[in-house]
Length: 226
Image (cartoon, rainbow, N blue to C red; front, top):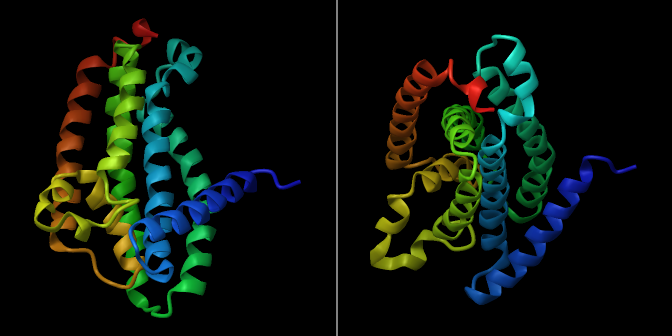
């Protein structure tokens, strides 16, 4: 009866339990910590799901790729749309937390929508690269899986940047942190920093060039790798 809302329910329970746990560990108020963690965790789940989907993305459509010549980004976009649907469900968790725990609501929150599209373009380009790489080297899916878990702990999701004190460069050098902050900052009522925008657009340009190069060079070989 609940259907796809099971994903939202399980995610919300995890966020509430971990939110209460880590707010006590870091000795922070639940009113300030839970919105920070809830938004970061939902956005991270969306990002990591697209990355992990991309590792086996082309294998799901190998029968089509071997028979019909279609642009490869179509298959990546299909996977991305599935994760956007999941994000739409999980966005109700963010809405619930913001309504009950955040008293300051303003128009700045709307900036999160165009920023979401910037990050989605980044993720689509990254997914194209990962899908080509993992199709050529099929064992690399496990490496990407482990790498994604490591990135989670190195990204300010459970912890805040302020806890690093004079070592904030550890977060600033992480593009995923800037991607999350592009969406989290407006929802928490303040504008993303110039650094967030610079890193997001710089990664977009780099990923676009790499994806264009790989598609042009390896497009004809992918069907033989499957």
